[in-house]
Amino acid sequence: MADDLVSNLYGNPHSQSPSSQLTSKRIKDIRLRVLQLFNASPGDYDIVFCANATAGMKLVLEAYTAQVGAFQYRYHKDCHTSAVGIRELSGNSKCFLSDEEVEKWLEERLTADEMASKTRGLFVYSAQSNLSGRRLPQSWARKVRNSGRKFYTLLDAAALVTTAPLDLAVMEPDFTVVSFYKMFGYPDLGALIIRKTSPGMLEFLGNRSYFGGGTVAAVASQGDAFHAKRAGAPHEHMEDGTLPFHSIIALDIAMTVHKDLYGDFASISRHATSLVMYLQRHLAELVHYNRKRVCTLYSESFPSTNGELTVDDWMRHQGPTIAFNMRRADGAWVGYSEVEKLAAVKQIHIRTGGLCNPGGVESYIGLKAWEIKQNYEAGHRCWDDQDIMRGKPTGAIRVSLGAMSTIDDVKNMVAFIKEFYVDTGKSAPQKELVRGDWGGKATAVVESIIICIYTPPLLGSYTKHVQILLNPAVDTKYLQGLPGN
Image (cartoon, rainbow, N blue to C red; front, top):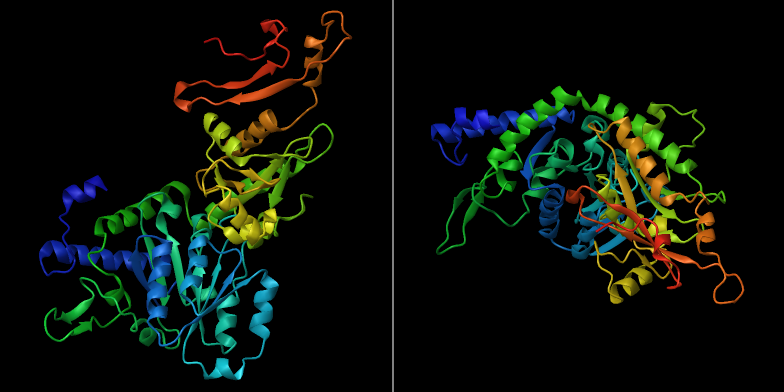
């Protein structure tokens, strides 16, 4: 990237200067390269560059709210929070709680009101759940179109494209959103991919009211409120203001470097899937000394652990992501906040909490809407440390694997859980250290409290635990693991 910027002068593309024309040419070439990556014909699809996948959804929403009359909104429970938020501007909304509910909706006959409606509805679903990694059916966009419903489909592909190919020629959604940083690590850039050949699409997008710099052919700010939008492909009138052209150029370089390092996304998908198969099997097998399972895994599509399924079997139904919570030997939940802090000390990067997937949290953990509201009123907020409330987790632990992940990374994760969260029952003999005759009274066993101590990773060390005995008369030599300073 540095060599490119030193060698070339790039200017605002909304001009005819040599530097501006160079920028315009590079952006045009990169649009075509991105479409090729997703197997999307330039004759059928167009790319609108934006900040991220959420920004792409908001661009679509702007066109919907410009319609005359409120629009109907349908979304799957595995949707990201950003998709759930669209319901607030719809006329009516429904969350499908299962794939079967979607299929039933698609098979229902249209009512007279639906056939007469002039307002387009929107159905949003994820290609892959950002919580559980479960992959949803690829056929829904075509089925919606063939059902005769006046609905467009929006596919959130942000989670899928991190490790798997996206074939728009097969899936054919009307809108697709992605975030490139999730694919390549850099730059911070996203895209809305529009199927411009969908019935009525160009006219529908033309309803969008707002316009910004570079999206109009003419505009008057005084007198008559006149403006004329730029004609042509959707990106001509939807990319408001100056494009982040340096980020777009960086995307071109990131795609090249990523492919040189890791190969194509089909190869990445097989690699990451083989790792998640290993991780899922080993997490499912972890048990405490009393044979109770350590991990509760969250996904409706996890294959069985009998070893009979191939990588191809997995890839059809599950991405390289595992969401779970853990229980102690007595059945009590382990707080995910504790796990994240201790994992950080061990240089393991995981994500915990609601994971921006409210439907997944509600379904897998069993939280009801009234419980979520009650937790909020009790002070719980997204990303805070209140990870268990009223006997239930408020979120989950998520492990995501990718192109750069290795088998050693996976083994380290399993070893981390074994070290800190699998109760082998061997701690019981420690009670013998404090067995004795207390002032002539009967022999007693004094229980102890285990307190985890977390220190910043930069200090280069950590204390596994400090064991504090409840009877102050016990000699301090029995304190186990106490730090030296």
